[in-house]
Length: 94
Image (cartoon, rainbow, N blue to C red; front, side, top):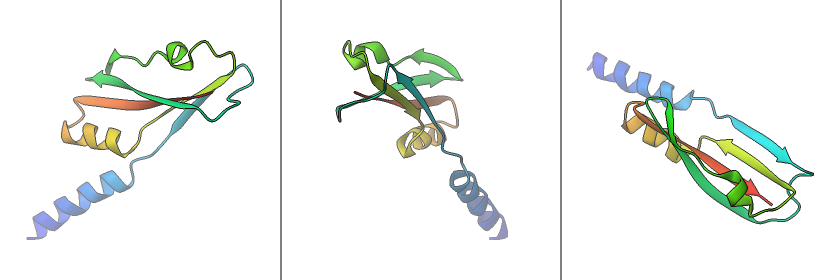
């Protein structure tokens, strides 16, 4: 029983203490409107296999901002696959 409690507590701490970070890139003067487009970048064993094309997502806009972050679903995918597959959410605001 003690082993189960330690294992569950350890898993909880790993998930709870996992850091969230956001990278923001501003193009031109940044987002002027409220339009938001989301996509995902996928990784296998740490190597990117698909990348969100932010220029296409921006649709030719001269002023926009790009946020890349890990959200709950990204952490869940990473946890379920034991780190073999990962994703990041990419958001373009214009």
